[in-house]
Length: 70
Image 1 (cartoon, rainbow, N blue to C red):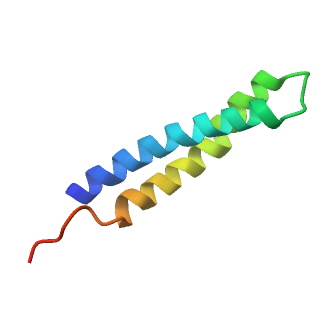
Image 2 (image 1 turned 60 degrees about the vertical axis):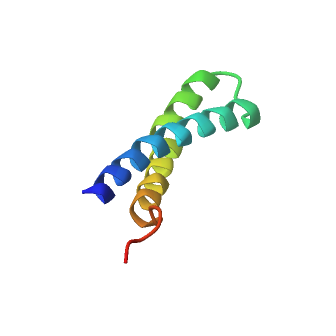
């Protein structure tokens, strides 16, 4: 049960971090001047957010949680 909770937390935190990082990178690096705001929102919501969620999910599932009991 603990692993599931960490997986869900990793999923949510990863999505948020991916969306924020993607939005920041697009706003700094994109040369689009016509609809930059739309590009930031769509890329964050549908590309970098889900990638961050996948990375967060895997981290929540497979990263060891503290010291193991014997």
